[in-house]
Image (cartoon, rainbow, N blue to C red):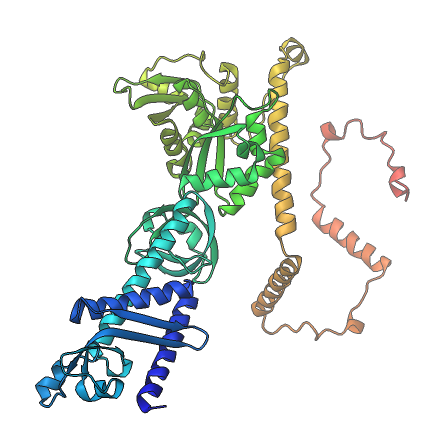
Length: 535
């Protein structure tokens, strides 16, 4: 075998190894990669040198042979000058000397078939072939990603965090596809405790056919992520018995979900209880997946006033009045709530009213009953979800809590107690409220009980005791707790104690005078039983 053929065979094996590596890394079929490489070679030879060249590719994957035959090579004279050597192109030309070795009857200007020698490729040709090949691989990858993930929009998938920056978060799916989470859809509270390499659930928002960095855009805060979690955790939602009309969120903080029962749902199905679950198990399972994000579930109503009333939950509402600046597209309301629940209706950092406004697509001004009275706003309890008596009791209860503790309440006479009316409905509601508070207290107690580490608590207590002991010693540096001999401690007997008592009474109580008014009736009091051990 000639040196030329040996070098060509080695170069062919290198090409095959490169093709195999690309196939494995990019997860593209090897035949497809080979066809892309053939296309890159054809594009360079036909585009740069001879558009009429007849190329034949001989590919043997088992023996790793890769040959390119040009059936239209032109026989030329041997280049002599440097310029002629630079202009000589071995892809489409062959010298008369080399051609005579193939065909002794060949002449200059004739056409002959000859293998293209990879070793004699110009460096610029290699670079062009590699550039075209890489570009074709990238375009194929983009097309494959687009075809795969365009059908997964709206799905929740696992993604590994690769880089967290101020401009967004880069992630990677299990198949190596790069995904991007923009800052506008990033749950900062969720990512605060995560590091590169951690896996999280993300929602596929969009898939682009073309993108320099990442074609797949994902989100951890899009409301549809909550929709998918509801479908996963609540079978009635997945079956279509309960519809999620609208979901609004403050990522990582709080969410409100408006639901309603569909026509296909069983008649006895109660939508709120179904979604929340027994002891709030279902809704808490979803909340834990969102890092304990608080989720309010409310009933949807076609009546805008009733829907607003439900959306302001957990606060009760006395009345809702439409404002003058209200429009058909964007309603504006004044929501009057009980005085004791004004803060509850607004929520922490205004979250409750903000979410309620977004859920109902309306502007909500929350005011208390006292504020409405001061502003002279006329309202009634006709549309309220709390009675006037209940609102008054809640308000009084709030004021009672503010009274001084040492001030004793006035006692009611027995007759006034009998004359007071007893409302059984109010009693049932108060009893239910007490049971709910007791259940919440029990849940908090259980959480503290099971989540606390007993060993840590003991360690902490011992540490506090040791610190206090050291502090007492520091107050009297000359005191030695081990210096006193227990044998030197004198124990007084009963006789000595009685003598000491007589001295005290004779000196300290010599000015004692008997009060006749206070001692009246005490002469006949028998105190002999005080010496009895059983007493």
